[in-house]
Length: 118
Image (cartoon, rainbow, N blue to C red; front, side, top):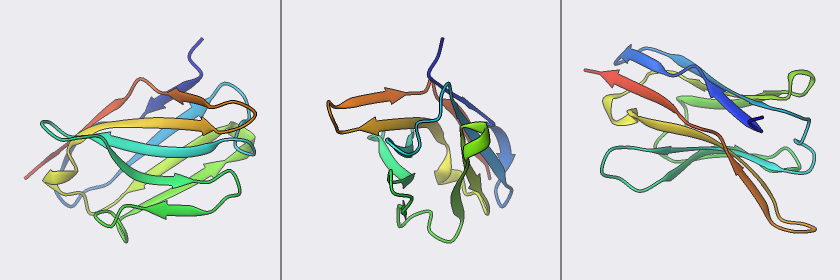
């Protein structure tokens, strides 16, 4: 079974919105940092937004004020609400979970494609 499953990607016009979902097979939020990454064509992978295991959030400067990360512990799901989308937001978005102790464990979702048309 997949440990992380993303959904919600698709095609949207500039200025529109999408909400991505990442569902974990078990509740790992208390022990893992949860993050959204993206990789645009010809670009390196970029950290977009994330939760620490303690619940603090952080965002890339390019998405601050437009994207919001949230979670529903009862559903083992992390969301990325994306508003005011721009063509440069076009990328494959990946959910990531990472635990640093007692050993480093990192799990990636399969990715979901977001395409923003101008």
